[in-house]
Length: 119
Image (cartoon, rainbow, N blue to C red; front, top):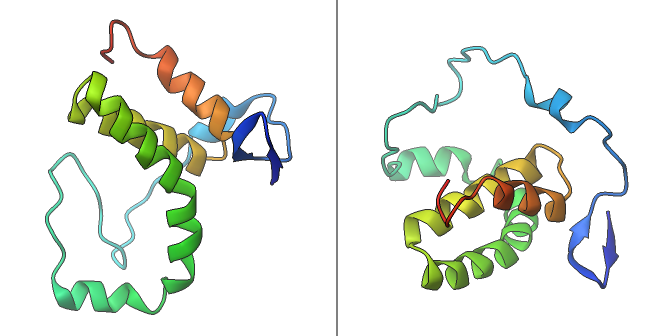
């Protein structure tokens, strides 16, 4: 990654000519990990939280540093649209970033899905 002052978010240092190729992964059930589905998630128990606390502590700062500017953007966006709309937009952007898309490109992709401030 490198920093470009004209684009305030860290940029991937590689080019993906066909990023859609990375969107089709084989998913399988792994009983060791909680499965997400269409249901609204519930708050984990203290025991569940502690199970992951030490193992993934090293991810805390990099993750929070990556999402912070997008959270700030979403807070501003919610003033002009709605909280659910802004949260959906930021979730979609950060999902694409997690899939390897350049943050600026991810932002543009998600914005392109909007028509009259709706997805």
